[in-house]
Length: 373
Image 1 (cartoon, rainbow, N blue to C red):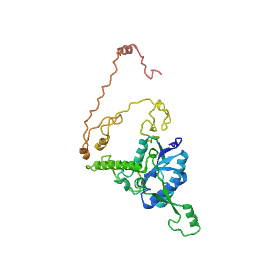
Image 2 (cartoon, helix red, strand yellow):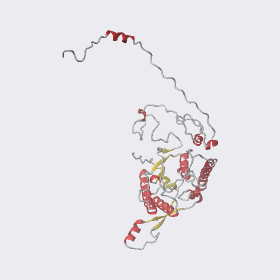
Image 3 (tube, one colour):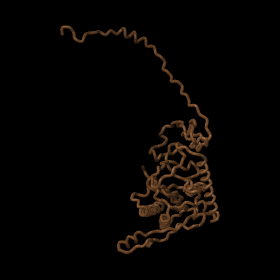
Image 4 (cartoon, rainbow, N blue to C red):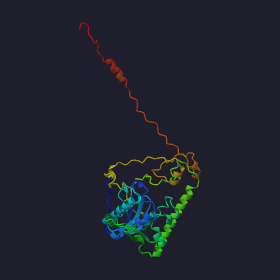
């Protein structure tokens, strides 16, 4: 699969960066030692490459960051330094011998609209709460920028100079823990659309976003515990054991985060005549086809999430089966299947002339072995 182009508009842009561990394994499980290492590596990378960090969160299997960069080279050097050094520290801490990161980091440019930038900040802050791991945003035990944005808690970590440590070990010196460690600090910057606001206004806006995230998560928990769920329900949540691989979604990523859908182009464009990167051909060459109607899943909980939306991809609703969780949703009316018209028969032809032609043709008969031969 070809790699996407690292493009940053002229003058700089806000970029959402995501980096995931191999097979989404839980190699970044929060701990006091790991948190100090992550912040230390991030702070040193920021100090060396002068990148403005607007938000950062480290989950158990991936990291998210909102970065303001001047060009693609600055983004590449910053992420290369951060990801490589953090991978070596994680391998040293956990004993993992394989590679740490699954693939290259994903960088998506965010438009200048305030709605686009605040929505991506809200998504970053919601990590840990939207999955149901913690009830409040501040409760996440890993590295999270919310405590710095709301409470002013400094983001300070440790950077270990492994080069000096290696040289001292080769000279036979006794090394104590933390002997070659230095303190690094991560400095957070406001979103570009909030640069004109005062610190009090910034704190109030972040507080409103956090409150909205926690209220949404609380409503989701109430819906999940409202009644017993059957095993056939696709919306039932399961807990994954530590270290087990997770099935990763391969959905196409947008090229640009924007509140206007027309600007958030996907891998397969909808504009006639535009070039499709995924297919490698002109989209206009493909003939237009009608999208067939599809039936929904038999799980009523999934149907409740979809609601009354009627799009070509949803189509006809199947009859509601008897399920343990059927009392939680309203039964939708059954829709009769359409009956196809009978096939048309070809008109009969007059073939009487063939019988007359058969009597006129006289074929002489002769035995296979003639007499006297």
